[in-house]
Image 1: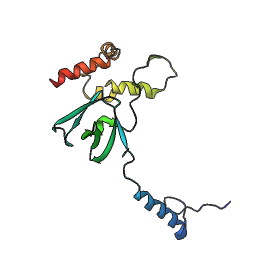
Image 2: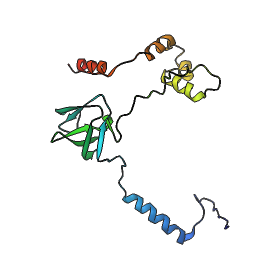
Image 3: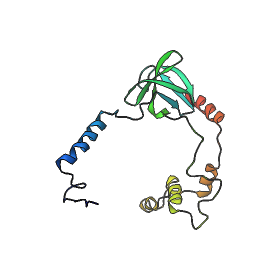
Image 4: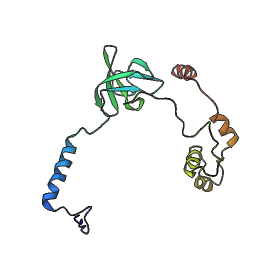
Length: 178
């Protein structure tokens, strides 16, 4: 087996000039690939309801409204917007409201029915730290503001236990739109 020679200031093994040609060809070919891998043929609505607009801007006229999970064929992409086809017309939708995959089940990183974060000595510190950070319980923050902003954990847990149905979300959105 041949030893690999490492030169100072080099990022990898010294390949010499003939060895760099294949590397340069691969890099050049990578530049020819599409810049964005998410330029899919269709996107799926992730939001409960999403507005399709006449132009790629927030104040544009609302053309239609689609429900969560709707598959929309992509015509083109312009900045943070996709132009899509919907019911024999073309409209624009924000990239923030769609994804390349259909929406899955609701997943929460903070709440688990199986175990309490504080219980279990063998639980990884990262999950407890993640939950504490999401609740705003950073020790640095508490130290910086003198403990002025403190969380009432019983109230935080009470809010976390609330279950909101999709029909309640839709009813809330109707009230906001009026």
